[in-house]
Structures are given as C-alpha cells and as structure tokens.
Image (cartoon, rainbow, N blue to C red; front, side):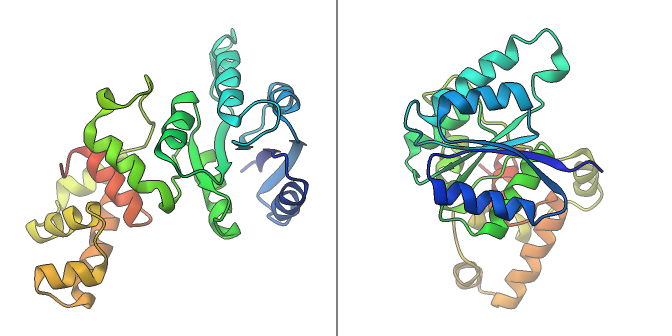
Length: 240
C-alpha cells in the first residue's frame, strides 16, 4: 500500500517543524512539502497534489478557509475528473466557534482538528481522512451534530458536510443483527452527550452493562468511537 503523501501549510515555525518531524517518524507517511503562508501553500497544493494537506486557518496573508475554497475551485476546473478529489484537507486550528467550523466544511475541508489535539489523534485524523472519512475533533463534534439535527437546509453554507453514514457491510450487519430496543435507547443518550455513568443512572443498569451495549453499538455501526457512532446514527436516521 503506497505511503500517505502529506503536506503542511502553517505559519508558526515551531509547530511546522514539530509536525514535519512527527510525520517522518511514521513509515506509512511521506512528507512532501510545507509552506508558511497561503500564497505558497496554494502553489504547493497545485504542484505536489498531496494525498492529505493540513491547513492552518490563521495564515498571515489569507485565511486557511479561503485558501481551501480557492484550491477546491481550481480542482473543480481540472479537465481530468480523477484529479479533482485527490487531495483531502484537514483544517488545523485553535478556533472552535460554530462559524469557523461550518465555514471550513463549506469551503471544502474534509476534516477538522484542534491544535490542542494529541499527536497520536492527529495521525489517526490524517489516516482516516486519507481513506475518505471525515475526522471531527471531539472538541467540536457537538457543533456538527447540532447542524446534522437541524438538517442541511438550516445551515448558513450551501454545501452539506461529507460524513460517511454506514458502509454496505455494516448495513448488512444491521439487517442481520439490528440494534435492540435497549441499544437504541442508549444510542439516543450517546447522541445527547451522556457519559456511561449518566446512561447507567438513567437506564437503571450498571456502568459495566452500559459499556457492553456501547461496544455492541459501535460494532454494528462500524464506528471507532462514540462521536463517530453518534454522527453515523444521525446520518442514517437511526435517531432523531
């Protein structure tokens, strides 16, 4: 399997140097370029066509959201359709406001990661994004969940957020082994943001039993964590 070709557009020198070194320590990743501003960043994306690009929102000459929008427009104008979606974008930022989050997705970002995120989670975000999944930082997941509940028509942007719901193999799992009534109740509480302890108290069961149900729910939905399970449940219409 080919390495993930990664580029970084970040104006903070120490952050850029640290991430560059981190990527080089992962054998499945190949660092292909860096830029300290949007102008050079856009040229980097057009020239190198990385698999995944990490783009900081707070660039000095143009914000990262505008950079992503211009890059997506340039991709859309390509004559070769296969080249239009070859680069995935992970927004890397300190901003967790609803306006910034939704503007980033509207501009064409695939994933959204806070700079406070641990390095191991950032690496996971890059890998997940490269496979075509959207990785959403748990710190801002509530913003996306709220927009999904409201529906795409209520958002200020004109682009729906691309988040995988259920892969065909997991749809088959649900058909063969659907969520039980208790699992649906717990899934609803997960979507509402309840912890395992909260769920145990509300459902009159032990925390250990809650964990067993949660593992079953994650397996059936093909989700790696509670946030992904909540997003997939909302997108698939399992809860409202």
